[in-house]
Amino acid sequence: MSVHRIMGIETEYGISSPNNPGINPTILCAAVVNAYSDFLFPDRQKPMRWDYYVESPFVDVRGYEIERELADPESWTDIDIGMPNLMLPNGARFYVDHAHPEYSGPEVTNPADAALWDVAGDRILNHAAQMASELTGNLITIYKNNTDGKGASYGTHENYQVARDVPFDDFVKHLTPFFVTRNIWAGSGRVGLGQESRTAGFQISQRADFFEARVGLETTVNRPIINTRDEPHADPNKFRRLHVIVGDANMSQTMTFLKMGATALVLSMIEDSALDFEIDLADPVLEMQAVSRDYKFEQQLQLTDGTALSAIEIQREYLAASENYMASKPFDAMTKQVLVLWRDVLDALESDTQSLIGTVDWVTKKSVLDSYRLRDDLGWQDSKLKAIDLQYCDIRVDKGLSYLLQRNSNSSEMFDEQEVELAIANPPVDTRAYVRGKAVQNYGANVVGASWESLIFQISPDQPLKRIGLPDARGYRSNETEHLFAQQCEPAEFVTKLEQLISEQH
Amino acid sequence: MSEQNFESVKSAPTDTDDNVSTGQSKQPKQVVVPDISAILDQIDAVLEKNSEEFVSGFVQKGGQ
Image (tube, rainbow over all chains, first blue to last red; front, side, top):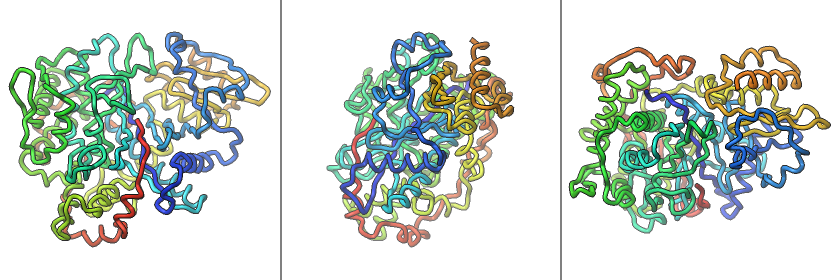
């Protein structure tokens, strides 16, 4: 047990065309995704489709079928609303999710890779928006945030593969206090209080004000702290996919790493029944908003037993439990990094918050806001402060304030640009994202559809489509399939060989 | 965020199950705290000139 498990991050970005404020955002999104599609596949005739097939319950229980011949692809229009959808050479999905461009990173096995392919997504979106701006002659800008400050929120979701045999109530019980307090270091900061920013002020989290329930299925209305959506994208008898919708988008690579790593550790302890304490918050929804407003750390959270704890104390309970839990086990360097970073960040929040400028997003953002408040004598309602809030997460590398601050910090980010470039172009080697990404790289013209659990190939227009199921998130990785790609077969031969290899495994 | 804190956690062997991971040896880099006041003019240069219009023009539809 460690920070290692199947995980991934999906981000809905904010999108705008400053010179055309009234424009339909779905059109902007389509322009951005289509620009990237044309860049990747300049000769492509038919758009790539999302394979919704696996999202039906019927296929969930029969997920092991590895071959399925589908009817004429024209019939797919019934199940596809026609919005651009791409599978990328790095194994990610890039598509239009209603009014937002969404990048769903590839499945990875650890928090460092999750953070790396998340940064790759920012660069991909930036590149796509640049090309779309040139093509349309209108500047299109993208923001990695979670609210427009006017009542709308959009998500940065984390996904973790967890054991099916753990009672879901255990996740609810132990994750709720952890999520309610995690924002003290994972929050990205926000100018404005309330969903529509009706009250002036600063708060730690972008997202906290948009949560209205403890547990539930919804993600767009009445959002719950613990989301119960159950699409494992893997063997449903063994796994759940815990879909975490409560987090902020992070510009800080280090905080993305810590967010994924610390959460993975808490999940390990829940699976192992290793958490021997219970923090039963009296009103978690209200407390999450209170924690978000308490950037001076003066508040106590009320528990049902009548006692109270501070947010930092609650985080320290989880950290101490993680350290004790790992103390009796052999563990790896990355798990150690997560534990050390988590402790350092909590210590710094208590002793010297300013030392976290450049590491914790809300601290970095607030330091800029405070500098302007001081220099220009601004109140929290001032539009200049709201502009700083927004421009902090502008993903243009030359414009975004988080990047500007990073460049001035005389230190490098967690990943250098060379690593990021590799993650833009290549999938992780140790999950099924490998075979997906490599298939797109090498046989992109033949990949007419895909999902997390499948690839659909068309060898020639007069042949039926070939669907290959990929039910195992840890399967088909480089040590199993690299040799297939190295052979550089013709598409038909490749598909036959891949199908054969997978059928031998199941 | 001192380097010596890395000693405070017991070191141990590497997780063998994930030895093909690309991210095994990544270190979160230590960050030198920037002096914000010294770079305010750089920030001024990239800030939107008409912040009122810029902020009111950023209207999103709800997502997930």
